[in-house]
Length: 180
Ligand code: AMP
Picture 1 (cartoon, rainbow, N blue to C red):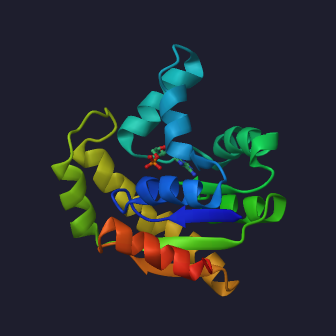
Picture 2: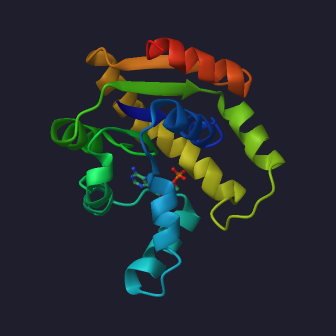
């Protein structure tokens, strides 16, 4: 099964993504995690990614797609995947849907206020988790990623779950939407 998780930072995408990965026995892939690992490299690309991530800005579409498709083209993703953080712009959604396909897109809905509350309550062990970067990421979600939500809604592929409930309840709601 090919699933995309959409939601602002703090919505619980990685928690739900890992639960779903176990449940469906398909790999979980987080674009943010890939970029954070690459940003540790002492190369020109690594340093540039670090700067981009720390600012909260998006990595340009072409670079993002080059890197993410390199993963998705690997044999371990041929039976399905749970994607967290990709696609995040309309251009990414169009190319990705055409090239790789997707069964369901799950929007995990939490308010900006709840997300900021959750993020501020967890230990900041990441350099890209400054309040400024988080605010920028949330703003960009409303600016760019809402087009992704609309795109999948128009195609009847989007399901929306209330992400402000308990982890177990959110997971149960997602499973129900996936017919499990
Ligand atoms: P995340 O952990 O998903 O919030 O991603 C962390 C950072 O990685 C984002 O703020 C962006 O700089 C970058 N990033 C992750 N996924 C994407 C994407 N699909 N398109 C562009 N940039 C991305």
